[in-house]
Length: 481
Image 1: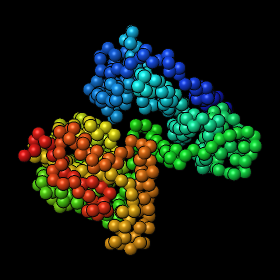
Image 2: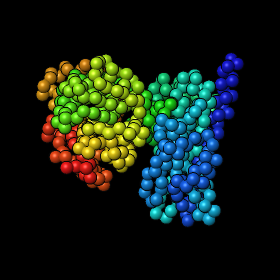
Image 3: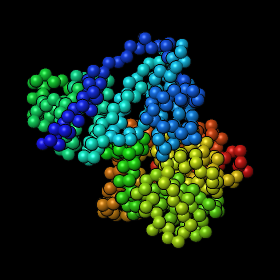
């Protein structure tokens, strides 16, 4: 009982302010801000020192900072995600030139960090910068095994939609497991409506959608609506993938995917995909290849199987994925590295004959930076071989598979698991950083980066004509012969 009371007091203390912030949220007076502030780069040394002073808990290493110019002159400073991660936007007072606010996104050290987004209008052309207040939840809750960050993200998502739509209440249905987690986390400060229904701010949360319960709520004057399908998909995605350790990356999602990923080896379109990628790679007679986003090493394993003298560096930031590679490449010249794509390229000084990226490009949001880094890591006659989907239509893949295999082959448990994960990616492509770039957009990006396609852009992963993947070999214009 004492432990229960202690937890209750702790949660009440830590979460009440958070609830108060959400419930009493008021939009800022835009007119007062227009003309007073401007968005500036924090690349000046003194401004960075001021940023560190204002947010002393964030440690920025200058060696890992890169600049990315965003729209309307906003500069994004991004530290390496494997260091203390922080993204900064500066809001500078025009008169005093002082750093008055800094938008940031940082991981928690203990407990949980939740960004509460408040858009501040800075210019008459409707440019915005986000101020993010961080609410920390006690590490005690974390030790209890409650994924509190994800649950807070769910509520923040629902709140954002309810405010945008102007509804008094917003309904979110959860399963029993999530309901009891919510009840454990928010029990001391939520208001109960029914035996398994409560509300927090503008969000009504029943354990499941019970039409009788909905009817009772309507009779009591609670006017609410269901969130749109897109919102539900995003919430499910957040609940499943949000990482307690690295909020900026969906590590949990990919680590879980790794356990069933090799089920794709029984899927004929995937077999043809890695065959095509390897065949194109080996036409350049490489001695050293970099497999970026290697996953469980299927492309790497096939490359060293076809060319035993080849050395491959395999890079992925999922430890679960990388752990599956050694048994596939026994006795071969393969090294693995646990890093995300961009940070590996930033820190590595190696050059390669061919760099391979198979179904990886769509996961990278900062592609301008990617192309610049890739161009600096290929030899004079080097190539970048990329297979990347520009659509998520799985019907093409199923049709291709069934042209060679019976229907029952699709019912393998490992393949079913793969389809579940792929469905999550497909359903959430418009709500996440996943970007299934079209061919024209991709060619425009290459042109700007000083790269070009070697030959024609082909298709694979479902057929040479209707495949969902673009397949292309890229060379550096300045070095191409």
